[in-house]
Image (cartoon, rainbow, N blue to C red):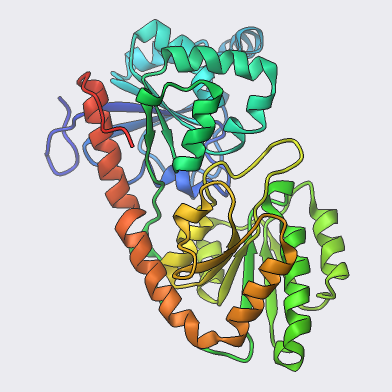
Length: 392
């Protein structure tokens, strides 16, 4: 049994498998690893990125292997769809349990699971349970994953229902909320101002609904007339739908009001969030079936900071945002409904502080990263010992 930095016994070693590790928007995965105390994390990835932003104690990067092993890895991975060398590395590192992040990573870790006999936990997050699941090849591979996997974690009940429809056994499915580092997010009740800032943050993809959000802001500002003069919009992100987003800015009459700083490190997102007065998250199901699956973690960041939310009844967002208390929710693709909520909160800024305080309490109670990591370690304990876990 190993010891941690203060001499207390370690429960075991957990292999976290994620590729890449990590994108700039991957803070929510890092926050499931960094606070671990009793279980020693070892990260396995095919592509390391942003290591200074997301440091870990041990990182096995396939990109640093010898050229012969990299070549063999590519050939076998392409032929089998699985990672060929993880099992050997896990035995070397004394791994006790595998935790794959995203359904497709779980599938690619099945060879390591067969080679080692270790328990395999897989967390599903979004597109892996929606658009990927529409492809017959992935459905076939998910069938094997559901058969061999030990436990499947989801962010909320909507994602859980989606996995059950795909064939995930209900007795091996557990809702485990993601967490944010509340101790590092400064809380400040939002006060009325003549220059309110509306923030949208995420990749520019259809499921994010940024065009709906921009058109809704335009409608809301028309209703506010002269009171809308000081409203500013910040759009953090980038992606394949940038032309569609830019066209929506023009169509909504928002030219000159919108700042687009591109993709930013998590620390910069939190800084800009601290300057904002509303967060708008108009998520929707895309034409190819892609959806949030769970809920965007920026919703938790915003509530922790005291920022009221306007969002949609989509995926697990209604569990993350309490309608009427921490935010206001409209139907998916309901531009008029979103506009009404935006206009309401801009007309009634005295509600901001009360909603922000409720949001902070909501996140501290059920979505704090350290508390959620303690729960995750208890799940690891139960799985490693062959005990059942409480199914939600």
